[in-house]
Length: 471
Ligand SMILES: NC(=O)c1ccc[n+]([C@@H]2O[C@H](COP(=O)([O-])OP(=O)(O)OC[C@H]3O[C@@H](n4cnc5c(N)ncnc54)[C@H](O)[C@@H]3O)[C@@H](O)[C@H]2O)c1
Image (cartoon, rainbow, N blue to C red; front, side, top):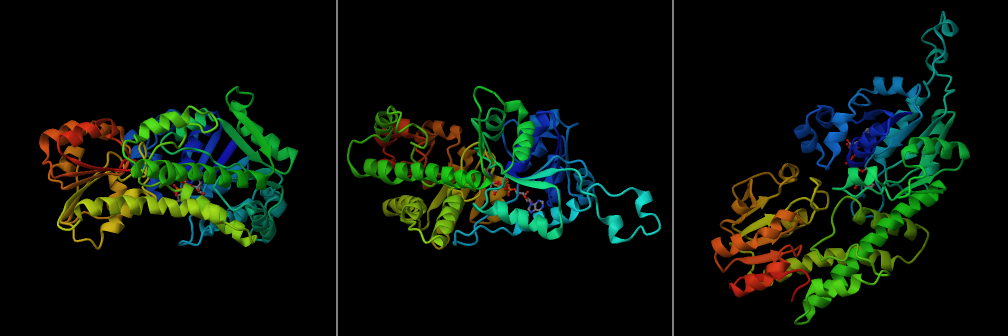
């Protein structure tokens, strides 16, 4: 099949790479020239510097004959003549703190697409002979059926709005499908090659049939559930799934973790083990962290709340999840502050990615920490992250008081307070270096419980540990 992807972000690129590896002919369009250049470079380092996702560069390089990246809409327009499906993978961020989705990227892309879909299957030169610049000459016959697929996370009734945009321009012979993306950043390729579920929301059998061909590779696979619903059910299930996952994290941080922070002799890991053995509780999300960041949970819960408010529903439970996440970070930073204060302190921040195995810093705890520290009179901040430092530097450029390091040891060398903000596995081994090389005055602020297995040793050696989930 010929598949067009609009938007070469985490979702568009990962999904496009998997489609190419499934045998489809894929064109990926984006307005970001630098991104397109790096992704189409065929160079592993450049691809990873652009999008750090395990397995992505391998897939792109291995399938380079089947996947092309472009910023040239003429190429897109030509491709549309015979395209079977178009994946909309545009950003849908929150507008301020309103919960409302900012659809300007989506709408701009949809309008440009509509204008070009109109030109599909142009009439033969003979048909327009004598009047080549007439509207008739530029209007296509549009006889090839095409589906437009919302892969972006969009409001529940977006399917209607997408159809309106296309119809208002005169586009014919199309269907609008919702196929929400459930990828987990850091495991996007692995998850897309072996998905647990593919949710397709469509109104017609014709659209379901096209989507089955798109995902033929997974059809009847024992591990992948193919779930067919209508487009609004698909969009709603994406928002609700993210809310429920976010809710689980919030319960773990704000109830389980807080309980362990409140009583003597409660080991978070021991309590967790006792909980997760109940399959009704399950193990996902039962870890403690200073903050649940990333591009999805916060914005999707806020969007759900906004949409429910518009239907005059009480959204207290939805909103509390968002609020408790904010409270969690504030609580952690205030605990550190109450132990030592930040004034004149050399602070190390380990981890700028919102979680390990990605260079995505959207809504990362470190951004919030930097904002929190802004009006504290700290001496300096030293930062290290194995993958996401370049993205962080764009937001917080290096200065006399803000330094970036190429190794975690360098970042903590002269530290007064070490804040572990991302769960990169290499941070688990830091205890020995801390104990052998740093002064006992150093505060270890573990926002990820990375050193939980060594808290006893650190405390016995005289270090003060402030950890989420520990008293
Ligand atoms: N990142 C995730 O983990 C994840 C998971 C599931 C769903 N989603 C959803 O998928 C959507 C995309 O997310 P993402 O993380 O890939 O975003 P992203 O910001 O990484 O990528 C979006 C891309 O769209 C491009 N773009 C913007 N306007 C454009 C236009 N008019 N034409 C062409 N390209 C344009 C941007 O340059 C960017 O490269 C969002 O709705 C998001 O909520 C994301």
